[in-house]
View 1 (cartoon, rainbow, N blue to C red):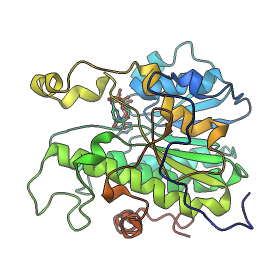
View 2 (tube, protein in one colour):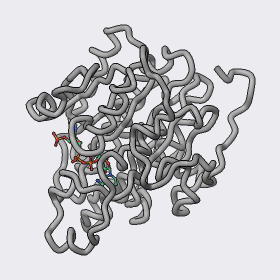
View 3 (cartoon, helix red, strand yellow):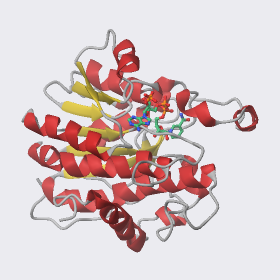
Length: 313
Ligand SMILES: NC(=O)c1ccc[n+]([C@@H]2O[C@H](COP(=O)([O-])OP(=O)(O)OC[C@H]3O[C@@H](n4cnc5c(N)ncnc54)[C@H](OP(=O)(O)O)[C@@H]3O)[C@@H](O)[C@H]2O)c1
């Protein structure tokens, strides 16, 4: 564990990794054997998450898949070795606490936390606390989950990784720290999605700095454009406007798996990744120099009652 060296910012530039847009999740592992390792993949029973689960499990990891739709998860997990199904609704803080409590009670360290679950362009709905649903699900739920699971990540004894599945939707804008829940500004479903995905990227920046002393590193990911159930809220016009170029789900899961497990990233963290490499730059509001935003991001979670003592250390 890096106890005697100061935290150093990883440059937001390709390594280069030798991988690219066509790399699959299996290839992105770089041949790593994950026997004896444990991963949690939220939303790991659909789309990119299911393929992430499959690649990590086939490499030997035990993969815990917490689902808000258990029947769907049971069907999806058939035939994948080493998968354990659980229940979790990221929009329900009590459900997150309960899942984390059960995990911590198992006494197992956590080597990889892949915060993958998400919704996109959902119409305005609010959770029981009044928080906008995309911000609550995509960002706040994962913030709370990482905070509650912090002891298990620390228990991994160095080498634990937290992956935030973000999106190129970070281009749509930053986090409105004064009105994250659209109480005083007009609601726009794409602005809300972009805000939640920028929060995912900033979360990785802030978490990496806080996790460093415990050997926990964090990354954010744009998986590419993949046809999945994520489009459920999109109109036909919106789907058509995006064109027909898609990655396969195997390619779409590659960057998540690379960030979760590839040894080529050892000693690095906090960066936004794409095509199984560190991306060449990203929008200004996500830049590494934007420390105040990363700090304020943490404070939005804290104000939401999600402060995890260990994460805030
Ligand atoms: N597909 C793309 O082109 C693309 C591009 C950029 C970023 N991404 C990101 O990639 C991630 C995975 O998306 P995907 O394309 O694989 O979509 P997907 O197939 O719709 O998978 C999303 C998963 O998240 C789960 N989920 C949603 N709300 C949840 C909640 N409240 N609690 C627990 N789980 C919840 C879903 O569960 P149910 O199935 O039970 O609803 C589903 O398993 C998302 O974060 C998305 O923003 C995707």
